[in-house]
Length: 125
Image (cartoon, rainbow, N blue to C red; front, side, top):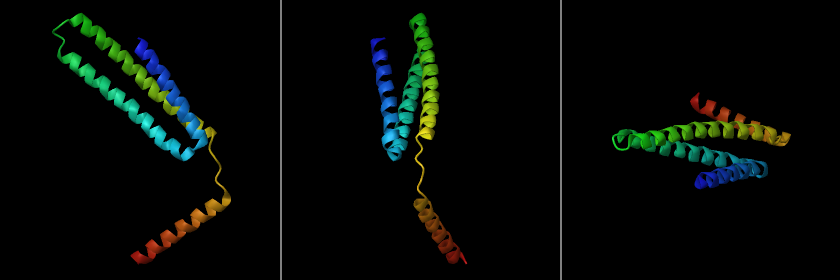
């Protein structure tokens, strides 16, 4: 259980560092969010592989393996809850720290969009 406690502390620090990154550099925050989701989904795949491996060999020591399966199922539920909480907290935090776009940037991007659309329509005509 000591390893699990260290893992929880490490994950908590990871989420905290992600939120600080979202405040300091919103552009890099998106990549960090993808990395966080990838690590959660990788953990989920590892749990599934362990569960399949244990289920195929239930003949030896069935009581111990059933206990291990119960722990894996509980871990999977907690992992899915954590994934949901991370998703909600990250989305909420990103909405809170949304930086307003200056007017001149909007005008500049609108002009570029118009130029692209007119050039594409002229080439198709």
